[in-house]
Image (cartoon, rainbow, N blue to C red; front, side, top):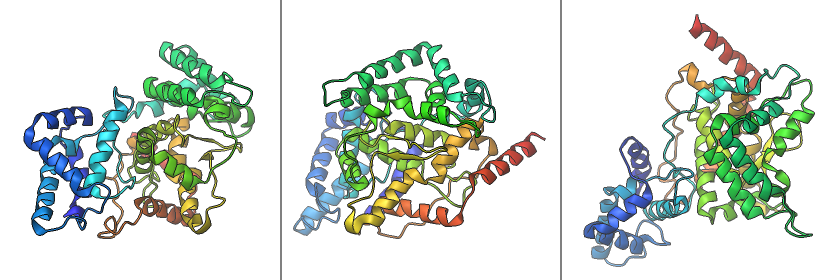
Length: 400
């Protein structure tokens, strides 16, 4: 019975649904819903979803009845919106429902409502915001910063994070990282994407990348928001992230929307660059904050490594490569800088990967199965330059 939940969750995206705060309030007002909800939580809290800890066929039947009842309630279909009022409370409700129904602690689905606007216009606006194409010597990242200062909203929220992210707290603390992270989240949640993305994903000329790339890297004030005294293991950082509802949700959103796919022309399973960039920017301001590393080109990583991984070295490498060697993410950033979007190519419906039956019930990590795609992508040896050539040719053919 539980194996049908993933399909139902995907199908539910087509139906009208409430945010989880409103859905919870609605459920608590209804005696039947609130009773079934409490029963479900008692049945599966902290245990497998097969009710093995529940004794007696009658009790097991009541548990399954409660599960089925919740699948028909507005709570089952609820989602949250990034930056919404009471976002943390909404996410807490979502994960409590999801984990109760799934019986696991995996980052399997995004708790966020899909954005109605695909933000495709930001790709075509990118060269305008940058003022000059990336092939010239113009520092596009500097131009993007100037454009931000000319926009009241962007200037306001940029100043709001620059202050806490650059103010030293004590001799040993360069800043108040918590305040810095909160202000950064507000910047990327509140500022129009064409300005915030212009600074974060600006393209740099091939001939002279040093100053441009460094300005891009400095966008989030990495000395405060990104760097730390010690560099933790990436799996340990992931576990820390999962204990926070905001970080956990933003990471699940990123893993879902930036999943690479070797059979896709875009390099993305969901064929949507805008959603990938939105989910990536959502990580900024959490303990999983990623940033550009100090090398030229597009190379990104959270502040972590895979040393001291022991027997989990392979899992750690796969997780780290979702940032450092992710074809979908890399192509999305390049597409923004070039002013092109996968949307103009009229892509095929997203490709659904084959999932082993019952893998969730056996406790197999979905994150690992998603990251396995990276291995195939690396073996394919996909060249992003040839990808853009193909995309350009296809756009030209459609115009003709």
